Image (cartoon, rainbow, N blue to C red; front, side, top):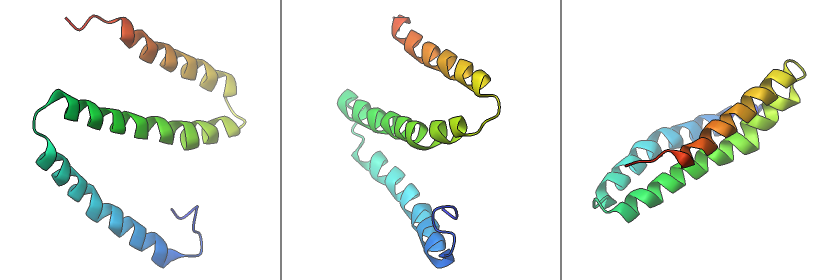
Length: 94
């Protein structure tokens, strides 16, 4: 937040306070609407997974590959990570 708004400390503090308030509130809302159905669980898992993918693709990966050191190692680890996640499809749950 301080990188995005370097001269606006009040805004950063208010956004962090909102995050601190809405995170437990979101958890409580999730608990209250969880009726135990598989569809509800699937929807929330997809939302959580999509959030992680969005943050990884839009911020973390771009920032890491923009740094000049160890680019080949980062690329290899990145590809191995993708391969591991892709290999989860072939694991039989039963």
